[in-house]
Image 1: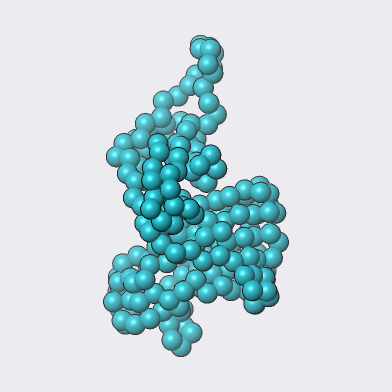
Image 2: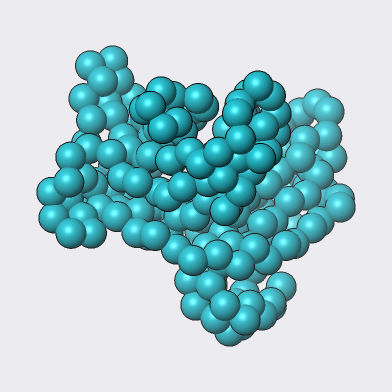
Length: 220
């Protein structure tokens, strides 16, 4: 599917997978960013935020993997995969970038300018890992108030990532309904579980500790 973006930002792709016993791969401009695993059971909503790092035309591809045989073979079954309510939304946004130790590079990330107490804060990220990661590597996002107290967080493993892989990462942080209005800082980093050893931040301007400031969001 070709699409045009007048500026940098994110392409939010969502669909309801109603059936399918094969994995699906989501690509933007021929780069694989997300893999939706096969499932059995009730319909499941799939969603991914893909980085539009340049204005102009882009190509979105969703394909089943592995591909079916070109020559039909009754022994090799090719299960059906069905997606309903396929939706696309372009979210314009400026990007921030950073580099961590061990070849972990934040190619793009953004947060909304404002959010609302009692609702979700969405953080969109694009990672490039020069060295492989596993399920003990944890990406964390912390939202802090003026006193440095954490009011929301997302500590998640991105699973097994082979060296040289790129991944579209989307974090949903529920904000407490009782959160007072004001400005809150959003910080990002990585640590190794269970020793909680953080990766050092080495860019964009040299060594800077172990957490990266994504920006400030105003909560209303």
